[in-house]
Image (cartoon, rainbow, N blue to C red; front, side, top):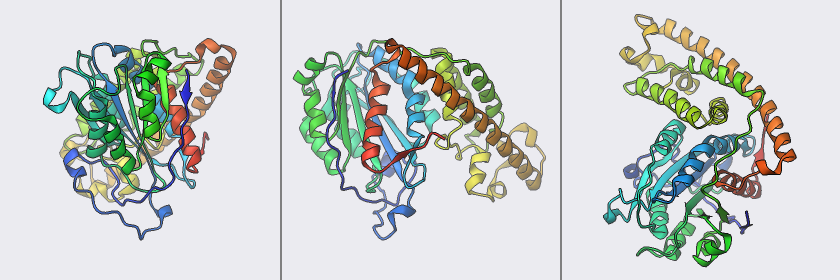
Length: 390
């Protein structure tokens, strides 16, 4: 794949609002606090993925499904001043006839969120359907609707992928990218087709104007996974890991079902993808404190005192607060042990994959995931992030 690496910006600002927000809440974000030391705030990596879901883009959607957890695992290795950043992903689709023309065939599937299972569920639900592909419109909506940070240390990126001229629609891509530039968001373009054709249809110019990178990929190429001797054991530890989640709250049971369903979705693509997901679940970025009591009590030791016990799992029926806390402590220790096992096996697995890939150039691919991973790593390096694979 040919690509153009373009310069990144340096002047970024700060914000005090951290976490998931709805599109409506995003319009009421609090004003940034410039008085707090930058090092005291948790850094964030914010990535908005804008996918063309018109009729010809089925291969692109399959690549996105196949690479989601690999991208998360790559992001999970990044550190800033020794701390792991908070990872937030947003998802948009555009160019689909199922979306009203009044919305310019653009739909926000998910705002920026740390809920990785939600992103997976929404991604696997995508379907292609005809359409007009308005790149300027979707970039403008993503820029305006999402709760972008303005911290100088955070990474903010848009990735737009498609195969029609970048100039379509009533919203000029130049105007839209000017807006994203004003918020210090880098815009990267991924043309699904010939490199020169992408240049001629303004995809490279979009990246150039957006302080990003231009890529071209074969969106119809099926992802080739490398099976390893460690996959089965990692999958077994994943099943044990699932047993450590203790749901609470009105949506707890639903969210736990979602977790299991995303395991199935990954497995239906490939055993290797389920393994990639299992590795993600062993990382700090995979945090479910909104419905899992183990994650919740890591930051809120008194959470048990405010619970509605009717939403807890059946094994906790009739248990006292002290007994529930003891149960959660036990599950926390089990989870940490299973995550340690997965992490150890993951390193051995990656070494095996690296060796096989180096031996077989046919296993090396230029696809949606490769484009996103490589460009984020380059920008992170320029901004002073380090990679921690331990």
